[in-house]
Image (cartoon, rainbow, N blue to C red; front, side, top):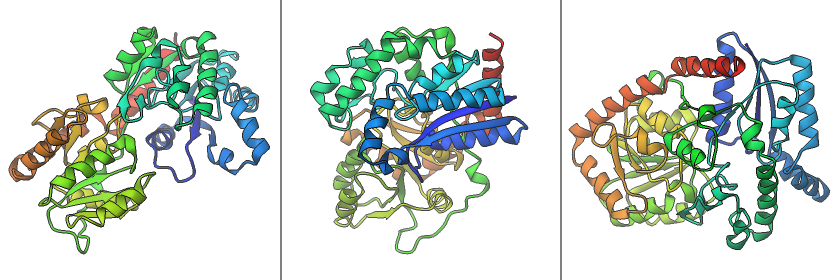
Length: 396
C-alpha cells in the first residue's frame, strides 16, 4: 500500500508523543513493505522566521495555500492510496485535508489530543479541565486567554476554529478518525461527530524489555520511584512536588525537560530524597526506569495514549496514575497499578506509600503490566489494526 503521511512537528528534537508516533508508525509501515511518502513541517520554521514571515504564518493557520498546493502536488506525483494526517496545527492548517479530499483520496486522521473539542488541544483552562468550547462558542477563549495565556492569540485561534466549524472541515473532510481512548470518543460523539467514522487504536512502542537492563546511577539509592517525561504543568509536576513536600522517606528520580524545569530543579535541590537528572538519553532513561520500584504519572489533562505509560508497562513496571483520560482504562486498580482522583495530593501519597511498602505486590503488578503491554501495545498487533483501518477506509 502507498500512504502519504502528513504531520506538523512541534520542534527539532521534540519528544512529544505525536512526533514519536509519526516517526515510529511510518517506520513500522515501511518495515512491512509499504511505501510511505512523508510530508511534514516543523514549528521551527515559525521560530526562525522574521517578523513578516511570522505574520504570514499566522494567517496561514487559517488556510495555508503553500501546504495545500504542496500536498496536492505530492498526491498527483505519488498517487497514494490513502492520506494519513497526524497533527495539522498550526502550520499545515486544515487546508491539507481539503487538498486530499478534492483529489478524491481518502483521509484518515489520528487524534493525538482533544483539539476538535478544545482548540488549545489540552482541555485545560489554567490547571482545570474544561471542554466548554465543544459547543463551538470559541470566543470565550479570549476572556480567559486560553491559548498560551494570551487574549490576542486566543482571538486568532478562536476565529480560525470558528471558520472551520462553520465549513464543517473536521466533520466532512476526514473519512476515518483514529481515537486513542474511550474518553476521546465520548467527547467527539457529544459534539456531533459520526460514531461510524471513529475507530479506537492505541499507540505502540518497541519492546523496551528486550533491550533494557537496570543501570546503577551513582548517588541514587538502590530502591527508588521514577517520574519521567515533560516537566510541564499538564503532566502534574506541581502535584508531584506537593506530594514529595510531604514524602521524606521515598527516593524519587525525575528525568525530562520542559517549561517548569528551572523551577523544578531549584525545588529538587532542597529535597534530600529527590534526584533530578534533567534530560536523559532515551535508552539510559529506560534502563533507569527498569531499575525502579514503579513509575508515577500524575497528569492533570486527558492523555491520548501516553508513550510513557506504555513504555513503563513494556518494562514490567507498575504505574501510579491519575484516574483520567488514557490512564482511566490503561491502569486497572491493584492489577497493573493504582489510580488516584485528579488533584488529590493525599490520594496520590496514599497510593505511593501503599505500593512502596509492599514490594511483593509491586512486583506482581509489574508482571501484570508486562502482560498488558504484550496484549495491547506491541508493534505487530498495531500494524494489523492500522492496515485494517486503511483498507476499510479505502473500500468505503
